Image 1 (cartoon, rainbow, N blue to C red):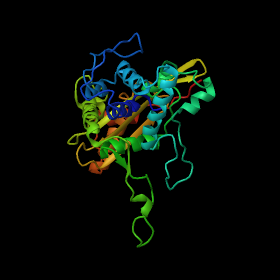
Image 2: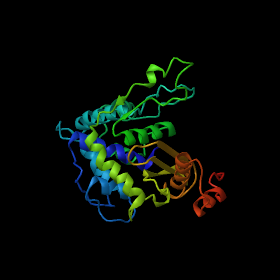
Image 3: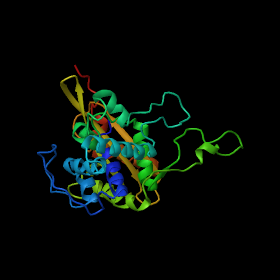
Length: 302
């Protein structure tokens, strides 16, 4: 599961569908879905920065239940189908045609998927609301999450990830020159990317440990709940990012299983050290580096 990194895509789809705009605000109503303590978000950038769960519950409800049918069950079927089309345009819910073996498609639930579990017209948004915050049935691979970071860096498109650029003097392979455009317009990426910058650099942001000296990092944290049956285990720590903000050179995803804490606690600083290494060719010794090197993150669960 991608956790709160998925909220970036809900923002984009909501704006493209016209059910919100960049200045839409929603109260942080914890009676709807749990959240940490912060002011209510008054814009998309605010919501991304603070990673407000009730905000994205409200956004996703508007995406999926747009009132196109009087029946909330029929309405949700139409809305989820359209939502899934957007997600597929991000390369999710299908195998990326990468030049390595073992690539998995992940899962973007469709109306057909929920019909299988609940029956036709036996589910609606309230049944599947956990998808709002990247939980529930949503499954992404770390590669797909890195590709989402690429799409954010490019403001709307990606080239299929690959290891081999070409063979001999034949030049790049044609399939790795194709720009895959998402269904979201360029203009809608701007407030979301600004929110990603604020995640790292503003008070109330969830990834202050992701800063890299001399580079503007844009990122999004995720905290993925981890259960074995009904037993609650340590959360997975997740972070995706790209840098620099303008003319990006690197996009990255870090997924640390059973690390505990949020995405900003462990995954974000790991990502920042990797970004620093890539940009500068070395990592300057620091307390952050020592903290990560000394950490024991993959503790065995009983």
